[in-house]
Image (cartoon, rainbow, N blue to C red; front, side, top):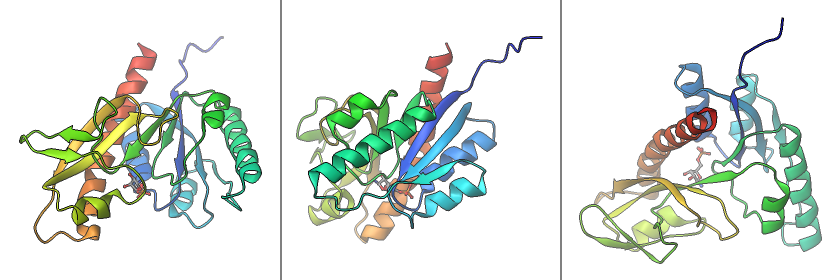
Length: 217
Ligand code: GRF
């Protein structure tokens, strides 16, 4: 008899570090709140704890390190291997979840699935330089790898996190969701990043859930 079961929405998750957001996706799936299959976890760093989190949950996990990141030929070859491996697992969505490498337009063209990115700061809808927050303050759109420190250094009242579609522009692309986090007077980088990550974990689960529902509708 032919199976009538529909295939679950498949996601590939790219990480570079601890993988607490990956864990949130794993936990939501285990709790029956996220109808997806985590098809692959891919890291650019062999010491990323997220690899262990994936293996603990019987999720295929692969590390493809980027050696000589400043050599354009090495980098291009690395991106090809990355995209080809992702394509082999045929995900419907690629989630950049604390993946600390910029991916080029060539990667985005080769990778067959759309990608979304988690960013630990507020990004605007218009791709511009400022974000209007809910309490009326205007804060700069922080981009790059050090945005938690930047928010503190600039003395901002509010920061947050954003999930957006990945385009060829770094830390830009259509916004899918955003949450604000108030900065406290005694915040350190660690305390602020912990609160942002709590929001990021909620946000990424919700966005992936919405995309999976839209996919199966
Ligand atoms: C997150 O804050 C993400 O936005 C940033 O790196 C952190 C990754 O955390 N780019 P984890 O590896 O999911 O714990």
